[in-house]
Image (tube, rainbow, N blue to C red):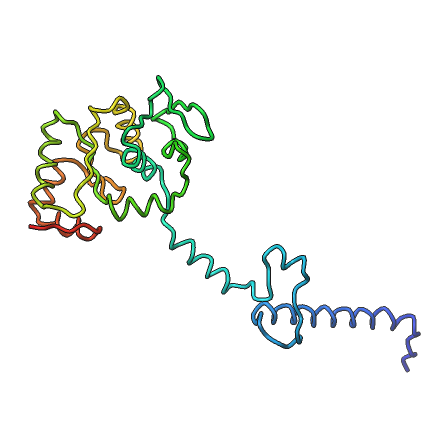
Length: 237
């Protein structure tokens, strides 16, 4: 016959069972809360005030994260090419080398631009207007097509004449690099950002679609109009 175990032996074992039971109940409760943040299973329970102060709430869950992600996705993504386009369009009288080899930038002072290295967006908005969401929207809506050209270049003339024949709305924005003291700097930046170092360099919604021969080929294949109209322009031909 087995002898009964003394109380001292049963005690630790019973305590361990109770502890595991409590841990299991707690884990199940936390899992339920994470899946049903608005559930009233725990009555009117709410987060402590110090957690609410940092932006958390009972419903801070996947739904809120998805909502925030959608909000961010709706904002235009700002890239350096947007900064460059904004600079040449919004500041037609400013130059990247207006003070010798430097430009005066609000908040940064005099900045020397190395076209082979990434340029701070603040340089492209030297007066200090950092509303890039609005800047990019303006570019997309009002300046979807930008042509970097040189007045004497026959290929540039050919590309501009072809685009002019489409009577586009809005019309292409033309930037003549040879009329700017910082033309060489801009051309080098364009080469780094678009992979194209020659003119004309035709940018559609911030992306290069090539030069004169590329436009002529698209026109010959009857693809140019659909390409342009697909990016917000209207051809009146």
